[in-house]
Length: 244
Ligand code: LP5
Ligand code: MN
Image (tube, rainbow, N blue to C red; front, side, top):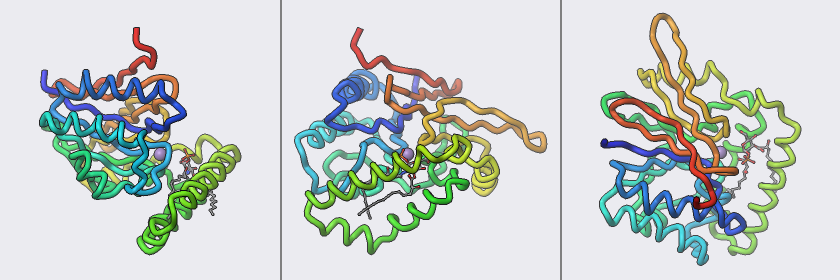
């Protein structure tokens, strides 16, 4: 049956070969049979510039090229860890970079897709941080720095983030329901798919007699998380890290 796949929050890094193995298997065995793959951000643990062409990054890029060369389109929306993925990465992999918010036609159902960080408005510290690091001049400056410096700054940011997150309540780090509704209404659609919060679930609710659906993709920490959508609907599935 024709189907489209969605993933997010893999946080790929050389320190987690189990996640990389599962991702490569997924690309080679599943994505090649799909109509399309959407990666909704945080594919990498941290991305510090397309010029960081390490053997690990070459390996991941090869996995994308193998799929796109066989004619399966792959679309990417930036996450809060890899918002610096740029056109060079896109050229090298055949992946199409999308805007932070897109409306796609999913087998007849208009669906809003996004990473999900922009829905967490109660996390005011994060939103302030996001506004800063999304300034084009700051990104250009960062990308001019030597890779060793960039690696150190990214590590500091990751540590600062882990530390800050320990002080935040789980409500603050979840989406703000009013913002979900506002973005849906603004786009004039009833369906949304996102990641970021690491709380995989299919939420369904009614508002003024209209049915709404919000699908949250899971992270790839203990197992893979894959959303499979067809004309029949969407199914949130998991994948084992160890090959059985
Ligand atoms: O990522 P995660 O899951 O830990 O938490 C996110 C939010 N944190 C972030 C920060 C990223 O993890 C850092 C990624 C580095 C990317 C590569 C470097 C590119 C640099 C480009 C510069 C132009 O996104 C976290 C949210 C959480 O999701 C849930 O939504 O709460 O937000 C924060 O932690 C933000 C903090 O509240 C405030 C900022 C702390 C960062 C300290 C920076 C120190 C930097 C020193 C640099 C010299
Ligand atoms: Mn995220």
